Structures are given as structure tokens and as C-alpha cells.
Amino acid sequence: MKYLFNLTFILLAALVLLFIVIPLISIFSGVGWTGLSEAFNDSEIILSVWLTMKVSFYGTCLVLLTGLPLAYLIARNDFRGKAIIESIIDIPVMLPHTAAGIALLMAFNRGLMERFFSKLGIQFIDTEAGIMIAMMFLSSPFLINGAKEGFKNVDPKLENVARTLGAGRFSVFFRVALPNARKDIINGMLMMWSRGLGEFGAVVIIAYHPMIAPVLIYDRFNSYGLSYSAPVAAVMIAVSLTTFLLVRGLNNRKRA
Amino acid sequence: MLSLRNIGLQKGSFTLKKISFDVKEHEYFVILGKTGSGKTLLLETIAGLHKHTGQVSYRRRDITAIPPEKRRVGFVYQDFALFPHLSVVKNIRFSERYRPQTSKVQWDELIDFLDLGDLLQRDIHYLSGGEKQRVALARAIYSRPDILLLDEPLSAIDPSFRNIIMERLKELKQRFQITAIHVTHNFHEAAYLADHIGVMMNGELVQQGSVQNVLHHPASVSIARFLGFRNILPGRLIEPKDNAHYFTVNPALIQISGHALENDYSIRGICRNSNEGLNHHEVMVDADGCVVFVHVPKRNYDPGLIHSGAAVHLSFPPSAVTFYQTSEELDEISV
Image (cartoon, rainbow over all chains, first blue to last red):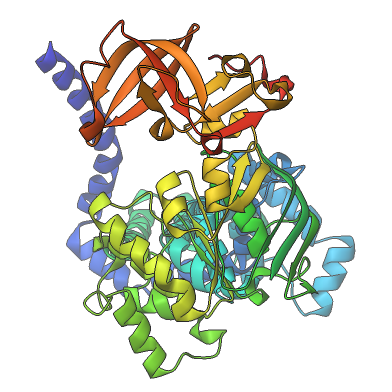
């Protein structure tokens, strides 16, 4: 009985793991070493991958600035409408990405918002700013929810003690709450950033150019077929996987 | 002097109901109460961490609206609440940025007083309960508070270390000129440390006064029960003054004899049972259907007089007795 249980569960678990791993292996084996090194020397690919990582990082930083206060307020307070606010944060996760792109386009490229941003010299159609709002809109829940959990796990008594020791609210946030929620916040940033790297549906509607990696993959696949798009995909996967594992490893090594 | 007037507050399942008391300068005030009676909430309120009704004043100044960081109170939680991301020494020195620095001499005195020399560079995750509590105390004292708030500071500590911390707490007020408010459910702590005691039940301060007064003469039957009084007896047994409904009597002050003693209250009863304790025998005597507990010192224990079924007289002086008129508590008393 015990063996039957273990066997069934391990078998089923292995199946889903293989399902995740096999496509990754296939893309690298399909592209091969030569293909991969050629791709790494293809400036269009490298620029596109760099653009993707850079813009997603900027978006993550912007959401960090506004999302941390939001996450902290939700974690520390009970107020009327809190459930509604928490649902609003989760909305982007369930939207079709193309629909989100259309919504962003209608919000930022018309009327008051459009006039406001163009006064600041910011345009969204086919610009990095457009790519960034698309990435931010769809992946911000990962950062906000991660930070919220992080803050919830910080014992409010620590903050109470800090206040009696003379620390004001800002000081308590920066010296007690933030360092103790650091691990969850960094994980949330990482999740948001990685999620942003893969954004396609919304980006393609707002900014086909400059091409981020997912758009470049799609573009090459449509115009030239699999053999041209696979190396881009391989480079993108290699770079983002390395960054992801590196940051997560560093973050988990130190005790939060 | 710290004065609380009509402090009221509702937070989750806890309430504080119009709490008023005064704590004099450099006094050690212990609030006794069961878990869930609102003791922690009261301390946090004194620290300024909750909005409340009523008024808190210190040295005749109304501090009700003053935020915690400006109140000069030190807080020590039951579970220590040490900052997990900081070392021992950084925990203790946390307040340095906001409060005038303590001199080297005072620092050394503090470290010496709480015997922290060997712990300073340690990671707080590897400290024992007693060590953590000493660090938490040091951190609070280092911020040079006027008032130290101690929330069950001894209950999460091994008994062997508890006495050391108790002694340190006892020395606190002279050494650092601190006024202390300590909440606990432990009568021994209260008796050992307190100058004054308050008893808290269901969010209400039901009695306050000197240690002697509160621990020996509880103001109501329910307080007597909370304080662990064994002999809560109906008044009819001794025909007391004012027709009091109940009285309590200290088991150690009851004398068992074959005949009634003069000038004392006296009850007749039948010996039922006897348990041998460390220093005394606990004898249970049936008096008109009520069980009276008597502590007989071992040297006075006479098996000829005290045995199951023996008819005895229980005598005790009026000073050992407290009377209660409280008829509203009739229902919940079972004697």
C-alpha cells in the first residue's frame, strides 16, 4: 500500500516536471551550441533582450515605489473596502493580455491622460514608456502581493517596540518593516520582473516597435519560421533563467 | 506621577472599561489578571499605541495625544520582540538615533547589571529565553524611559533563570530611577515585586491597593476566586457582622482543636481528608456541608486529633477574615 502510494505520486509528479523541463531542453538542443553562440553575436537579438530586461526592471522599480506603501497599508490596517482594494490588485492577473493592452491604449492614448503625458514629453505608442506600462499593468500584482505577505509576516510588536524606542512612523517602516520583509519583497520584485519579460499580448498592441524579445520571437516566427525564431527564444530563456536563479539563490541564502 | 483616567477602548475581542489608576514616581505597579483580561492592550495604550477615550497624564501634563516615540516609555513584551535582523548589540542600541546617548559608564553599568558582556556580538536567534529577555530589558532601559512597561516578562523564561530576572527587576527602580508597570497572572511575581497591585478582570480594574491589602483582602468574591482563595464560605457559618453573604479566611490562620477558643470565630466540623504537603498538611473539614481547608504545620500535626471522622473546632482571629456583601455574585458561587 505504502509503495503503491509513493509510486503513484512520484510518477505523477515526475510527469508534470518533465512537462516543464522537456520544452526547455528541446529548444536548447534544437538550436545547438553554434546556433546559440551565433544568436549571442546577433546584435538585434541582444539589443532586444537587453531592452526587455531593462524596461521590465524600470517598471518593477516604479511599482516598488508605489506598491510598497499600498502593500504596507493593506497588511497593517483593517478598513472598510479592503477586500475590494485587494481584488482590484488581482484584476490584471485574470485579464486577457490583449484586452489589457486595448484598455491601456484607451486610457493613456486619449483625452486628459494623453494631454497630460504629452506635456511631459511622454508618448506611449511604439515607445519604451508604452512597453513599460503594459508590463507594469499586468505584472504588478506579483510584487504587491509578495510585499503584502512579507509585511504581514513582520510581527507588529516589533514596530510597536521600535516606536517606544523613539522611532517615528517613517523610521519604523525603513528600519524595521522593510528589512524584515526584504526577502518576500525581493522575491515579489523578481516575480514581477520575470513576468514582465514574458509580456507579449499587451505590449504588441501598444508598442510593436521597439521590439522586445517576445515580439521579436513572434515577428521572426511569422516572417521566417521556426529556425529563425528559436535562437532568440533560447537566448531569452538562457538569460532570464540565469538571472532568476542567481537572484533567488542570493536572496534565499541570507536569512531574512 | 502617571495618571490614567477613564481609559476606554475596544480592540478585536478585547475591551478596556473606564480604567483609572495612579502610579507614583519610581513605584513598581503590578497589574494582576488572567490571560485575555486586556492587560497587554492596557500597556500598549499607556505606550500611546492605541486611540482611546479618557486621559493619560504624566507629571501633571496631559500626554493623551502624544505619540509613542515622544512618550519616553520602554516596552518589554512577553515574547521579547527582538529585531530579528539585528545583532544583540544593535538591538540594544536601536534607540541611539532618537535619544541622547548614554555615557560609556552608563552603558557599562547596564551591560554589567544584566550580565550581557558575552552576548553582545551574538545572533539573537541563538539566545535562550532568559538571555533574550535580558536583551529586551537592556534595549528598553538604554532608551532611558521614564516609565517601563513589562508585559508578562517572566512567563516565557525557564524557572531557573526566572529568579535572576526577578532580582534584576526588583533592583530596577533604584538603579535607573524608573517607574515600572508590570502585568502578570502570577501572584508570586506580584507579591515579590510590587509596591502596589491592581487586579484586572474582563477589561476592568476591579481592585487596587497595597500588596498586603489586595492579596489578603480581595474586594469581592470573584477577585478572591481569581487570587486562588480556597475558603470562600457562606456567612451563616460564623454569623458575622452586617449579615455578610460570604467570607474568606486564610487556611494557614485556622487552628484545629478539640474545643472552641475564646475571642475567635469558631466553626464545628468533621475531618474528612488530609493531604501531606511540603511544609504542612492540608486538612479538609466538612462544616455544615461546606468544605473548609486548613493548613496545619507539620510540627503541630496531631494524628490523634486530626483523623477522618473526628469532630473538631476550627478557630481563627477576626483579622484573618474578609467579608463580602455582594449578592449579585450568588449565582456563580459554589461553595
